[in-house]
Image 1 (cartoon, helix red, strand yellow):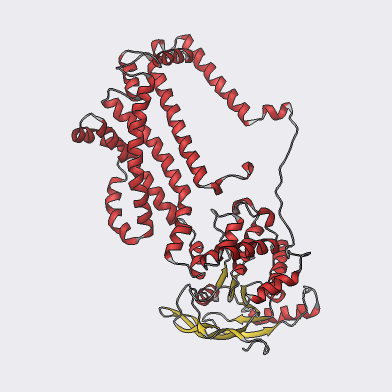
Image 2 (spheres, rainbow over the protein chains, first blue to last red):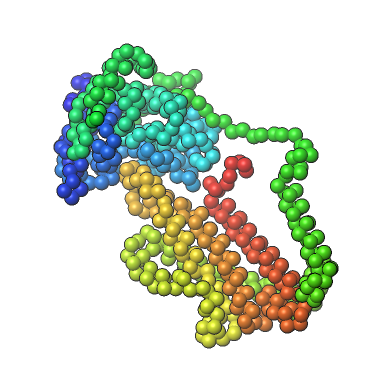
Length: 251
Length: 293
């Protein structure tokens, strides 16, 4: 389960286990993510995906094992961990601009730095013109762009994404996946992207981890070594998609 | 951090955006036509109000209710007189002032205690566990039920009226502040937790602003209840206030005085609710709708 040999290990998950009483949900999961790598995680419905992410982000404690960032136990107070949730999590009482700045404010970035970085991020995701509107005044895709911009803006050690585009229609999803890849290529973040959309995973990721049914383990690892921008109907793309689909099917 | 800056540099000045679409604000302009005037919201408001006044006038003039109903104009004349003449030593302004003062004192006292208490109950399970059982006993009691006991305790002066208003406005203030916090999406807190924020950040950045709209909804309900309460108290025992005007009209079979009193209460209550709505707009700018961009 080692990432590309060239880049140093950024995220090291060792023996991650989570039990709720007698129920074993996550069973001794170990993997590593290289610095600047884009890792996708796919699994069948109900495979403990949310629990997995909540452990990785330290929202809930693990039963055994832990997650290490740069060799230190992950701690939201020390490390920059960003989380893009499935539901839009903009704060309705902050303008688009203030929402993007919000993560940096919590991380106590200097004011000048925040101003600069927000300008850059707003420009990158195309929100400059709407920066003084409130989230309820922009479209659903804009709202998800706000949270993605906020997540990238803190220059995260680890960026976790939980099916951020699951609730959008196909066209917007393609748009935003494409933007996400460009953002990642531009800003060089280390990303763990969880989805149950296999095509999405193959489109965005450099490597895919396939999870098993509960109790969840890592069932397989698939490298996606395709040039970008990726073509959804390229035979090599389709072959990888089929391979992952075969791995994931439980019927 | 350095890599991120370099990445942005690489994008270059020409192509600073990776976005596939950009949203720009738009404003619609349409020509003024007869159809637009007729279907205009405000035009229709005027039409329905005028129709109502006309109907009222015709019914009063027909004499169906004998002395029990007067025309709208008679009400206006009666109350124009009250602006200068006195009733029980006070002009109309004096009576409005008397009622409004009771409302203001009771309303402020109740909300200053009830809102923080509601917030505390929602944020802290121990405060909730202590306060809730007592609160639940008083919650279903109609405030009017307190009128008699209030007079027994405080007499027929100002205190008993203010007391009833406090009782009436306390419950919706507290309940709305409480629910405003309970109904917040938990993900909004998770964002702060993942970013390493403290509990204090959660309360200040999420709980308080999220509860504002609910608190203001509670204040609006409280305010209309406050007018009900003050009226009930003034009808029972009072020497001033809009409720007193109505009672006087009833005693002397002066329909203009009764109806005028009712209209004045509606007017003053409406103005006071506008004040609350204005305050909400000021404190919750994100609640503006897209039409007023």
